[in-house]
Image (tube, rainbow, N blue to C red; front, side, top):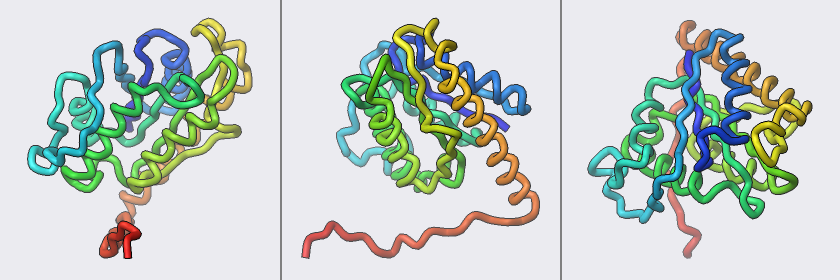
Amino acid sequence: MKVLMLNGSHNPDGSTNAGLEIMAKTFAGEGVATEIMTIGGKPIADCIACGKCAELKRCVFSGDGVNEFAEKAKGADGFVFGSPVYYAHPSGRIQSFLDRLFFSTMCADGYAALRHKPCAAIAVARRAGTSASFDVLNKYATISQMIVVGSTYWNEFHALVKDDVPQDGEGVQTLQNLARNMAYVMRCLKAGRDAGIEPPVADQSVFTNFVR
């Protein structure tokens, strides 16, 4: 089993990555492989709703990791999206990245690479805004039939720099318990598949825009 993790910070070795590394170490103890992709400091285009992804089966923009992540997602069993907090919301970088990732995978194949797979979001801040950021990141999973995994507290921890992360004992504990819960869910899903239990097929026959 493998979990694909996204560092939504421009910093490949900051506090967001430190949180993901804590989870990666815990996953390793559970026999689960991990890969961390970092968005980095390159410009990230916003989704412009051009619809070309339905034709191309990928996002029309390339070179910034979105299409690479989407391809890797096909072979992943679970996902973790991590972000620092900026002005009480996730980084604009991860929001642009996930907007395009989720819209393009929806148009390409109805979220086939993502749906019915466990997902978790984690957020780090110096002081506040983690809950709001955590909520925003979870919205991507809950619209695409992903399985949101919880922990013993909201998936947040506190640090100004990465060396602060170990000092938040409960935050570290939350991340570790989150990884163990995700490993458990992935094992349960695998056992179900091995037993011939297939995921449901969603009814999507109704589409409204609230205009009457």
